[in-house]
Image (cartoon, helix red, strand yellow):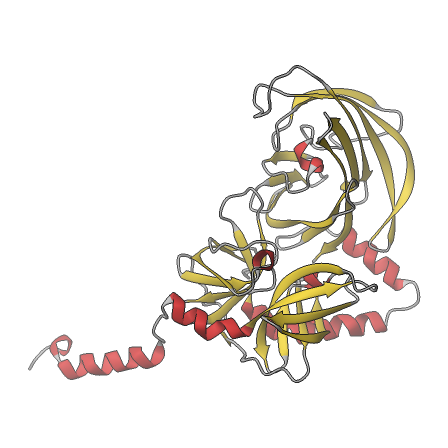
Length: 417
């Protein structure tokens, strides 16, 4: 009698089972052809029909798409578009805690995508991102699933080397069979090939979570909404949470969203945007390697703009340092703490202290700029909230020559949970 491993019929049967249990991996061109009609661009507008943001969305059911909530933030209306076809859309199920929003479109016939099995994501598997980076519709990028980030027994973030860029947020991350693994959400600026997506298995919970949140708010007594916002703001940050700031160029009026997303909590240290920013729980900066926040980051002192544990009105100190990001300029500044007052953040009144900065900046031996020896006046201010343990607003300006300089502000608008 032949051993079973030599039986051709057994091998044939096994092969048939494998063939029926696992779809063959698609070549990238075939995968793109299959999926491109299911990924659309999103455009948002304010009450005056002025453009706000651009993103992507994935069709998950007839007339239903999912995007990231931060793409829709502050929009009065929005549309989905592909090539020369545009549809008006409405918000159906918001889940800002996971940054996932389901939208609906009437008379919409685009084909829904298939979802990958829950919990099936594997580090090292080949993945593909499809979205609309920087307005370039229907863009495919290839990479690996490079990490499963999060805690509490669930993967709160999928890390990938597949390239994404502004405009990709809300697009799809697919496996080699063309099944949806996740919704792309952000990339770490200046952090190497580090990009992230929310797991697709969260989509099944989206309607229930959204309805539960709306029901809870409808049953709140008068005044509870303000207290709820305050609690949400003050809760400790967890992996997957994000700080959403708006950076404004005060010379041109251009406004840009800046997201600092928590990818890891290690004791009293929080890692943002794949480790490009690491802070203590009180907001003091441990390391900083990215200038995602413009001057807020590129001119940051060691420890950040509120580096002392017990700030009191009237405190003063002197700083002499070389910034670790941007042009790596040398700064000689004097800091002084003003009196306490209040500032509204995401609907809540917070006590804040204004820390003013005055001084000079110079080219240093580590910068790529010419060492001319000339100094440039620098002025800045940071508003620190002890309740949140972080800066909620920053302003800075300097002028170098007639064509170089900056005048910017950065303001916290909400915390995504």
